[in-house]
Length: 75
Image 1: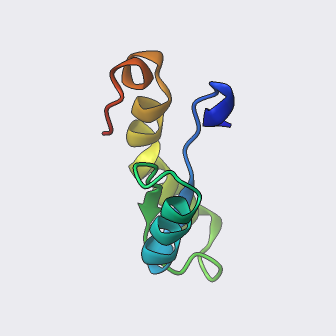
Image 2: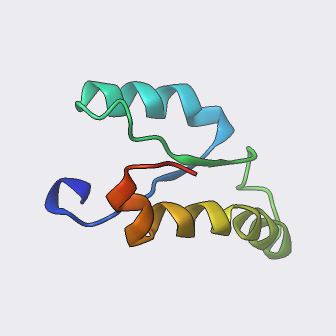
């Protein structure tokens, strides 16, 4: 999406940090890093998943904001 000028943020668990970074580099985007949440998530109840999402919403919003995109900065 970013190749089309649409800001994007991938979200993954810490378990997939190295594979996600390797894939981004293989696709020519070594600077594209995901926002990571604790692993695992499949055995979490809704409230626990919502807490993990709440913990990273600020970072996601900052990466998606036009000012962050224009400056090319990461949170």
